[in-house]
Image (cartoon, rainbow, N blue to C red; front, side, top):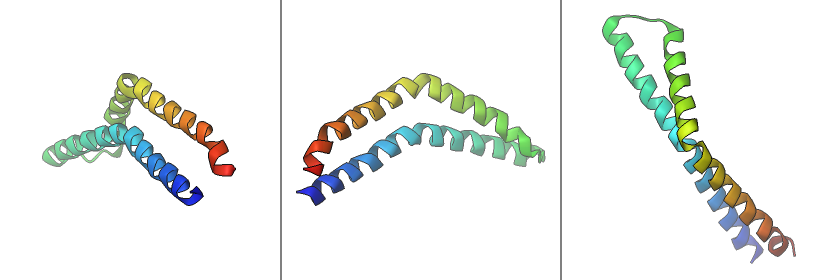
Length: 89
């Protein structure tokens, strides 16, 4: 029972991590792709040009989805603390 419970928690942990990280990573990827295409089309090779749009989009994603991300992580932590006694006993 201990092995299946730990594997279940590990699986859930990976799923929660993916759900929390995905919006930020996908938004950053999309902005980087668009800025890269614009840089290739205009022959502007400034390294710092991609930083500011990515930073603004990541901040916007965190403002819009940050509460749901924190709720997801908090629910998972509540589940972990509730199951600690079952796993360690």
